Image (cartoon, rainbow, N blue to C red; front, side, top):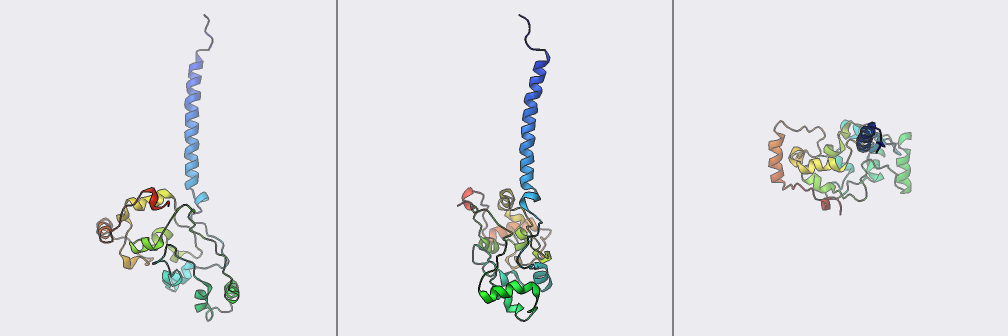
Length: 216
């Protein structure tokens, strides 16, 4: 019987098959890389807010402690956005006539809250408790970055599950003394691993990586 297919058909079949596998694999890799990219995560992208609040000025310049505005961070699952009267406790006397602060004064006078755009916005299916992390020695800057250097607030870390798991799997690399949690200038010491293991034991930190920890 005469040969139906040309001798090159086998080569063509192999090239087509392995080329398709390579193309699909490359496509999956590109999608994953895009999902991690700053374009999708919006890392380092400053958000437009009703008032251009500067952490660099208030925290870095004036030295205001995180807890002055985010009062519930040590006791609650959420850090909370300060009510307008917290802003007015200073700005009724300082820059009281500033045009930039007109939305704050209007909010205070009408009792209607400012509509801030949430920067660190986790999906609804993710449970995160600020108080647990703060009281276990995880610094604000570990997740939020050096907000004391941000003239406008942006996302410093991608907040992807793999990023969170990096800390949950090795908390000794990130934990710090509790009295340094709100210190934006804190730098891990050369013996961080030794100190971290000591604090993990002292603070009874568990390496929680099961689904139920965050997805409840």
